[in-house]
Image (cartoon, rainbow, N blue to C red):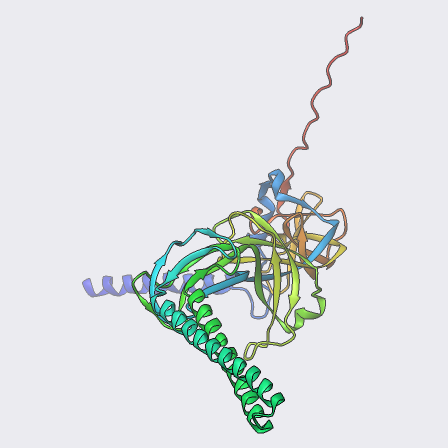
Length: 391
């Protein structure tokens, strides 16, 4: 009896499994038959979204004067600078200027020990005095021999010898005087003077040190004329012109400093093949020799249909902009042209994909899918006019 009951339960279980498999098989779609299409979740989500825009999120597409610029960078360098060097070798006795002091051309700024040069000057002067005395003796002898020759007491040969001695004494005196001038110059070179107007940038020696010949003692720079040396790529050279205007931002400052392209180097740099351009920078109290600066040179200006550079999105294979089309977002592929500046903002020329008068979303609006409903900002209301009162 127990065996029969066990087989009955097993048969009932097999029947239930068979009915379930048959039902699944009938409900399965036939091979090759298209599956039932449901609405795309992304499309439904995009259609259901509603994005409220702020005034700064909406940008007009307009024709603007666009300036093509060339970005440059480099270090500021004083046009006039000089090193005060030791023109004689001796001990540095004094140095009266320090870094930051202002000096004038010809101003005495230091002294090298002149003792040795004082004695050399005195020695040369004494030698010159001796040579002068010898010349005077030779001149008197020549005068006497001329008188003796007229009286017939000496031969013409003796007179010629006296004339030669006088000429030799004259030459010896001139050589001694030249030595005096050289000694006097060495004595004067012991006094250090500023060669140009400017400010002291470095003290390279200290009093008490023995400085060698041509040893550097002080560096002076003139901050009234500064320039920026910028490396220009060969492809940018045809558009660059002397006198082109530029704007620079100096390291540590947000203020814009005007500049002008003053010179172009006739030779390219070995290795980089770039050509140095020299920009004359307007004088400014905050500018210093050696500061790093970056800026833009104006190359070309023309009227063009343009949008802000940030509004041209590049997260896809082709640049595009999100256009506002009847209150919805629409991605429009763009054909872009020249990049430039307008009122200090980075802009890009639009050659295709948008028309003048269109409106696009700024980068701050984020990535907006196609079809999203856009709620535009309310136009600014004009202030109500004051009611006129009858007299």
